[in-house]
Each structure stands twice: as C-alpha cells, then as structure tokens.
Image (cartoon, rainbow, N blue to C red; front, side, top):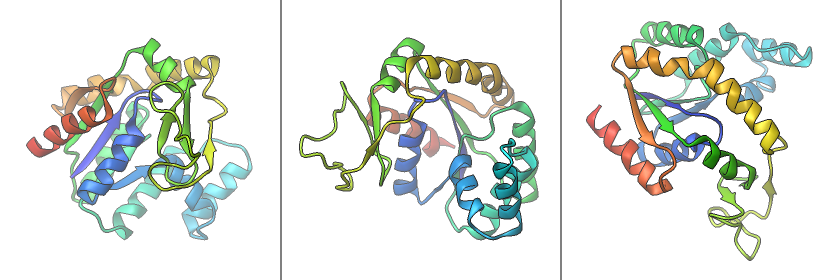
Length: 215
C-alpha cells in the first residue's frame, strides 16, 4: 500500500507517518531525510546530491525521483508513505510514472485539513525530541518535567529556527501556492480523502486507519 500525506507544515504528517510505520510495516519516504542520507552514501546518485547541495542549488525533481526509485528497489516493506513529495503537479506526474514503472499504484492521498490560525499557534510553540522525533508543545503537550522524552528517554530537544510566526506564514503561503493544487489533481483521480488534522492525535490516527482499511 502506497499513500501520500498532504497538508501544510505543522499539520502533523510526520507524527502520523511514524504511527503507520510502527503499525503497518510501512516505510516513510521523507525527501529531506533521503537527501541527507544520500549525501554520505557514496552512491552515484548520492554524489550528485552532494554536488548540487554543496553548490547551494536546488535538487532537481529528477534526482528526487531517482532517490525514491532507489528505495523501491532496495527497501522491503508493506508500503510507502510519501512525506514532503510530491510538492507540485509536475512532481505528481513524475511519481505516477515511477509507480507505474515499478508495477505499483497509489492507494490513497490523505489530506490533513487544518485551521491556519490554530496551526500558527501550534507550530510556534512546538519542540521536537532530537533522537526519536516525538513532538511537544508549550501549551498542549509540554516537555516532561524530568527533561526526558516520554517516548525514548532522550534529553535532547530542538526548536526549528523557522518555527516563528513570520517564517511559518511564509512557508504556509508557499504550501498554498505550490502544493495545494495537488488536492484537485488527486480528487479528479478519485484518490483524495480528507481528515480533520486539528483533532487529537489518536483521533486523526483512527481516521487514517479507517481510510486505509477501506482502500
């Protein structure tokens, strides 16, 4: 089973992807993680990535598709979760061709719908465990009083430098400009389903589980 999680930054895509990885033996394909791993991999495509990033240039769609295709051929899993890709209609077309070449299909595109103002408040107060990625929030889910991650016990937490209101609103605008057209694209293909991304984490997970069980 292959799915895309759609939604603006801070919608909770990473949190839900980690739950699916644990529950369904799926693999999360995060373009950011793949690019960082490729830089030090020593493979041919990894050398291309390292060169492009060293020059401060944007990684091309062709390279990102190559990295995803490499994962298809080397990683054994019960499905893939696309996180952060596709971002544009051109990338969506490229992903469709890649899946066809691999003899696979896209089972669902799950949009996590959010309220923009509530999302700003959510993101500007969040921090993340540097070890396992568990997300905390100053108001709704404070870091444990003992200073240890409740999931893995790590004492290292990070705040994204762009998790301030001005930077976040810029990222939100970029999402609506570049990525939101994918909603109509996949709706026309009968693959788009929406869930309430502002609900409690467990409720969102249950809604996603129901969608996948019916796919």
